[in-house]
Length: 499
Image (tube, rainbow, N blue to C red; front, side, top):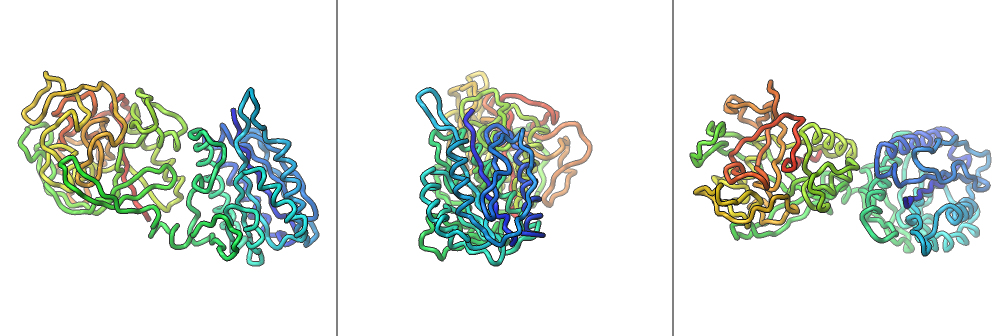
């Protein structure tokens, strides 16, 4: 197994004594604990902790997460902060511990290095001597200038990414080390998906807002991350973009799409409104003939069904029957499994964003292009196997369907044209779990942002799948199953809320 080496080089000069060093200890404990919960990180990441004051010191050699013991960290009595000496030791240890590739096997991934300093290097000459030696190793170096007296200028000479912590309290350091652990988790997943061995800035998640800033004043900086405007969850300018597309009806549309930063899932903005929920075509499906007016607030809905690749990034496994690639929808997941995925994803976002399964009303409103009278989730009234993945066999022919291919398996998400909201596969491919408890007469549920969570042993699923006939892939059809039920045609998509 190729390892992902992570090195922490920490300043333990006298300036870090007291609250600062105690905060660092708490932060490292948080980081290690978080990483041990991540199956990708647990499989690939190895961590080493080094410190420096008068000279460099090894507190923990490169050790796998399941074996590492959190070291005791103490400050020296000298005000000297010999970062150059610490970097000298760091370069030596990377050379000794990181396995190189040879003709018989591939070596470890390039290292991730986190350097923290509270001031100006006392040994500037040695510091600058070590810079080209560290860069020669071609790892990704993240520098952190901690405290009001720290000068990020020097870190900008050696680091690819430079952060500044204005305060050294425990909450600040815990959030910083949580960011490190999430970034390591993301990198751990990335190394399994890419052929290259060099990680880069794009492997890192967005920085926590309001605490970290980035110094961009030094001309030597190769990479900086703008924070306050671009990383604020309220603006998220790089995460939101207008997209233009052609729907299944052949019309040109545009809509706002938001990219969730941990998995890369895309969410489409669905403007709220009122609509008639139920069977508007008189197809007489039971129990969909209860028609009522429902009013919904605006929401973000997954542009695609959750994929196997996205599931693996959060859960570390793949329960799907059709393991044909990361862009195929995850299936064989129960309603209970979906709740575990949602909980894990919410934890990764630490309250900045929240996710859930859509309500039944949200799902139908979005499938019908904000409540229009359309029969299928691509915005059309005729089900065509060339535009929806369902069982188009002759014996299932309906007045509102065409016959054609029966693929007998899932297709990659986004294979067929979207509806006018930019949503793909709202009919067919896989059934999609909803949050609601199933009730026969949903006309008894409220009409403003309704979701039924009363008594009942089943949960709602909508949209039909690859193995079902045209009747089941209609927008109005209401399916239901036990929350523990799984099948190779049952998946989900999510609703997102940005706080």
